[in-house]
Length: 194
Image (cartoon, rainbow, N blue to C red):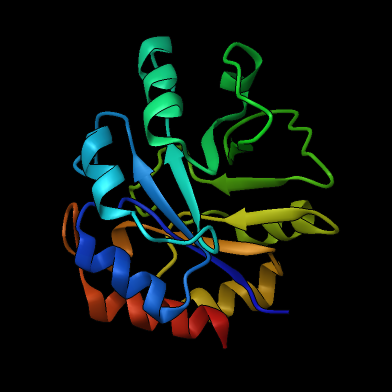
């Protein structure tokens, strides 16, 4: 089965189109303080015409309730992604998928069995590689999206070792912080899908 691929931290229309063209399954738009943060209007403009084939993911980390509500109402994402603990205090309409993020440093993690979740390092978007052996234990019979430290150079090896449902990349497909690179996006997706 094809590995599910998410390209995260998109902020330009040309990079959204390049990711779609190369075969991405999900596009991540960051709504928290970061070099990759986008406004709701920009996210709407650059992600139009994705035809529902590609999941538009609103990415958060410990969000303010007002920001959360505005993104849900105005951007209307297909998916909300944030730390697993945020979902216990923030409500999500049934029509929107919930992707909880579990970090390698969390203790006593209980992963969902049927639903998609992310597994990554302590800090998002910093290229921190996780322990693939540990991740492989957590991905068994689950829909884990592996994130953190993946690039076109190591994604094939990561998929072979961890056997995740999907992979997620942000900083490793950038020419400089926050600025995506079309060639790196294409290489990452190609290597992940092969």
